[in-house]
Length: 360
Image (cartoon, rainbow, N blue to C red; front, top):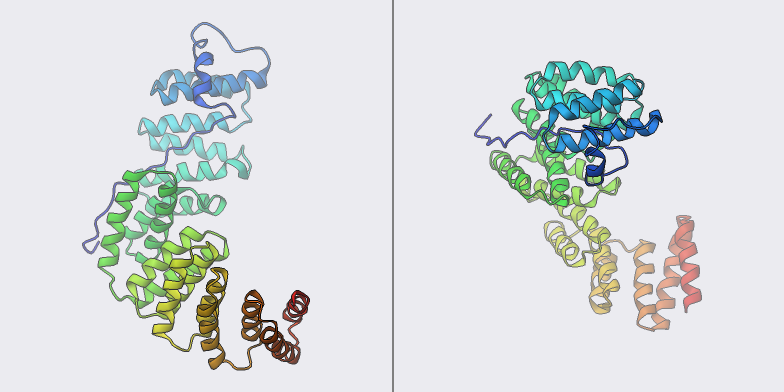
């Protein structure tokens, strides 16, 4: 790869937890050597899984495997024991055997656990240097659960190996957001090193910046604000002269009620494009929210100078005057807003104007 610094691959070893946390299984684990779980198959199955997980975490793999096999005999139609046995094979670096077990478990499960199985299959194929298969399984896992940070990171690293920097940036950025939320600081630093290397090699890459801009917009539509912010910020680094980057980032910050950052973004937007009416309108709305009415009116009047027939701008100015108790000016702007809104049959705006009249 062109001077790219690869981070340590994170193989997400996933095992299935059944309700009870590991810390709560210590008493159960103490029974393993002397007692047989009860006669109720469902309870016995759960006890075996819980005890097996405790030993797995203690790296006592033989005891864990024994309990998982016991669970499998009790209820062979359930996938959990298979997945956990496969996890032991993965930990022992017997990846081909793990693949066989995981593929069998796929036939026993519904979508609720398929993301775990797909992710583990991706890890196995990655270790076996079968990168195409690994990417396919990671993407299957992510289609079911977009929050699988290990799958995102490993998929991004594999894309980077293939020279697909756009896909790599997107997945590693998304993974970094989740790792940060999980407070996994070491992996966040590793992500930063790889991201810095990619960005350094793609300065002023407008095509790549556009890919990130579009992906950030999708993240925002899906209400993943932190993810959108990360994508837009890197898009700005790659193409700092694109006013749309700043505008969309400002919208996300506004949605997150980070008004200082939003105003900064909209200010940069209008410096790059003084004709951006939406940026001025958003600035006016934020200043109004902050009760900075003079600044709000200033921004909205700049928007009005650019679009004199836009009823929303008249309505927004009227709302500022309502907030300042200037009823005469508010009524004047509402009248103009209503006439223009009626002309284009904007029923939602007309309803809001009628409600504003009542506020007078």
